Image 1 (tube, rainbow, N blue to C red):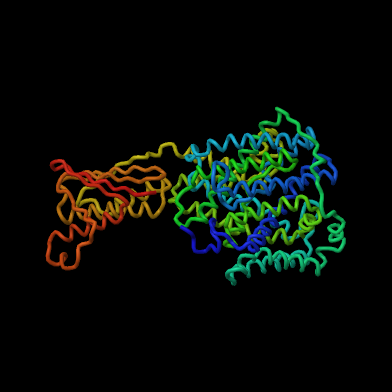
Image 2: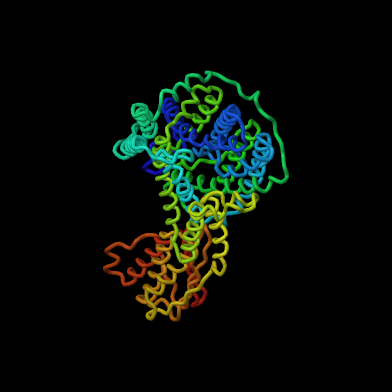
Length: 567
C-alpha cells in the first residue's frame, strides 16, 4: 500500500525531465563520498592523477551499481531507489592495501570483497533471526548518527587541515539548510521534489558572493578537458592472502548497513510494512556486490548502498526506481566528462554539511520508527541502548581502538560497524530463555482482564511483536473470558496457549462447557432486544472481528477455540 506522503512511489514514472533533475540531486549526494578514494590515494602517497583516476572509476562503478540495484526482475537487484556511494566501510582496509601493495592491490582486493559479498547475499534469506525490527532500526538510525560528525564539521567549515570556523562559512550553511527545509516544509509538488537541488544552488550562489567559493577554484573547472577516456591508466590488479580477513570484515559491515538501507526502502514504500523482506534484501546485497566487483575491475573505491540518498528520497517524496536509472546514467556520463565532474569537486564545505544534515534528519527518524514499530521490553532496551553506547564510544574515545589488529580494525572503524555487530550479538544472547509458546490459565469470575493484559503485554515485549497485533489478541482473549462469565460458557478454568513467530500469533483456547457461537454477521438491534442469546452472539462476533482467522470445535463437553493473528 502506497504511503500518502510520496509524490512518486517506487513503481511510478516521473516525466523524463523530472527524472533527470531528481537523478541529478542524487548525483550531488554521491559526489560527497568521492573524498574517500582521494583519502586512500593520499595515504598511499599517490599522485593527483591517480586520485582523479580513482574518483572517475568510482563514479562509473557507482552509476552501474545504481542501475543494477533498481532492477525489479530476476535475482539481482532490490527494485528500489537505493543507490551506492564510495563505501566508508572499505576505507581502513583499502588504506592498508594501498600502503602494502599500492592501488593495484586495492583494486584486486575490492573485487575479491565483491565476490565474497555475492556469496554472502545467497544466505541472507536464512538470517532473518539476526535482523528483528530493533536491530534493523538501530542500523538505520546509526547510519545517520555515524555521519553527524562529518556533517557537522562541513557545516561549520572544518576539516582535518582547517580547525577554524569562519562566520561566512557558517552563514552559507544556515542559508543552504534554511532553503532546503523551507522548500520541503512549506511547499508541495514540484518545489518539494527539487528542494535539495534548489537549496544546493542557493548554497553555491551564496558561497560565491560571500567568497567561500573562489574564482581560482572555478578556474580549475575551466581547465579540465571536456571529454576523457581514463581507462588506459589502469594500474592492474594484485592479491594478498593477508588482506582477505580485513576486506571480508569490511564487506560484512557494508552488507549489514545495506540491510538497514534496504529495510528503510521497503518501509517508506509500503504503508502496511510489517517486517524486512529478506529475499528482497538478498537481491539488493547481490546488486551491491556487482557495484563492488565493478569498482575493483575498473579501478574505483568499494561501493555500498547510500543511507544519505535514501534519506533524500524520503525528504523529497520521490522513490521511483526510474530515478535510479537517471542517476546511474548521469554518473557514467560524468565519468567521461572531467569538466562537469569537477563542478562537484568544488562543492563548498558548508553546502556539503547542510545537505548531509538535511538528509540525515529523515534517516535517523526512519530508524527510530522501525525500532518503535515493535513492543520493547528490558531485553530489547539493552540491545538498542548498549549498542548505541558502545558504538558511539568509537567516536568519543577513538584512542581506545587505535592499536587493534588490522584484521579486526574494520569492526571498530566507525560507530556504525561497532553498534551493528554489538546489536546482532546481543540480540542472539538475549533470545536465550524466551519461550515461543506460553500458557495462561484463567479462572472465570476470579481472574479479570488485568491478568490477561499484563500477561500479553509482557510476552509481546519479549517476542518483539507489533503493538496492534498484541492489542487485538488481548482484546479477543478478554472478550472471550467476559463472555464465559456473563453467559456461563465455562465450567472450569480456561487454558490459553499463545505461540508466536515473526509471521503469526496463535491463541489456542480450551475449556469445559458450552461452545460459544462466533457469527460472521452482527446481531441487529431487534435481535438484541428480544433474543436473550443475541448478546452472547454479539460477543462472539466481536471476537471474530479481532482475529484474522477463527475456528471452533467441540468434543463432548471439551471445547476448543483457535484464534489466528497475522503478524
